Amino acid sequence: MKKIIAFGASSSRKSINKTLAIHAASKVPGASITVIDLANYMLPLYSVDVEAEIGIPDATHQFSELVELADGLMISLAEHNGTYTAVFKNLIDWLSRIDMNVWKGKPILLMATSPGGRGGESVLNAAKSYFPFMEGNIVADFSLPSFYDNFSNSGIVNSALALQLDEELAVFVHSLEKVETVSSIKT
Ligand SMILES: Cc1cc2nc3c(=O)[nH]c(=O)nc-3n(C[C@H](O)[C@H](O)[C@H](O)COP(=O)(O)O)c2cc1C
Image 1 (cartoon, rainbow, N blue to C red):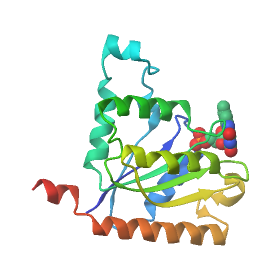
Image 2 (cartoon, helix red, strand yellow):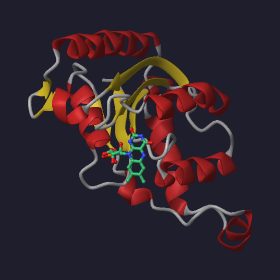
Image 3 (cartoon, helix red, strand yellow):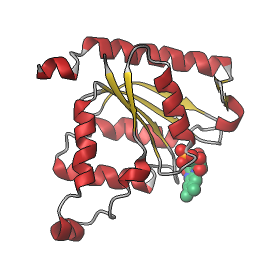
């Protein structure tokens, strides 16, 4: 069974990106899904001085291990002032201090949503251009604009957008099928 980790790149308890990531993950057939809450990764604000003082926090290694054990990643990016939320950027900065192999080449379905009409397009574009420098293998992406108009408890209500997510999910699932599962590599 393929192992997927899913998270919204936000520390908000009511994160709409976490909601979207969980929704998308629920549509992957026969996979084991681990949902990560970034509120559990509120690390000290990165600085070279803090690193010299305390080293790399244990939670950084724990997050890196979760990525290592996963076959694929489903990430939905919250957008703050056109880019990553502070909690996510901070986590990336700490992860990059282990090494630059942050995303370990795992297939990624990268998403974003926001209440506005651009659907987090700026942060999505930022990640699409920079994740590859951190071994981020983005195989599919999806932006959901106007979250509160287009999403209900039953999922995406706009049929064109729902179809678009299904198409991106199909590409992501296909890319998972092409990779040997992590557990089979280990045994
Ligand atoms: C400090 C701050 C900055 C924001 N900047 C943007 C922005 O640049 N673009 C945007 O579409 N929404 C922006 N928003 C609105 C967020 O998209 C909205 O709060 C959304 O719910 C964040 O995702 P989350 O619920 O997953 O945390 C901002 C919100 C905050 C609090």
